[in-house]
Length: 126
Image (cartoon, rainbow, N blue to C red; front, side, top):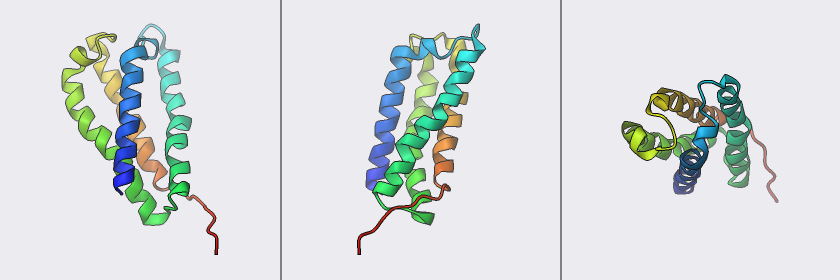
């Protein structure tokens, strides 16, 4: 499961960089459709960075659920601290957007965990 912990850290790092550099384009209170779009866009993105990896690594059933937990865990732990320093780290976002950002994070981590329940298939060569 070490691979999935590292994969989760990599996803967290890339997502954090995207929001640090371009978060001001996603979280605009005056443009709720952009914020809703960020939530909707998370669905296929989370699917793309999880489900194919389960198949690639031949994980299914309870092992797939464990993998999903391992993917979500690093970011959840790190973001618990990052959110305490939101206005210092995400200087491109107004401090009052921290709750919307935290809401999006909960959404994304929930989606990651839900992928652990998606039935995946893979081929094995006998």
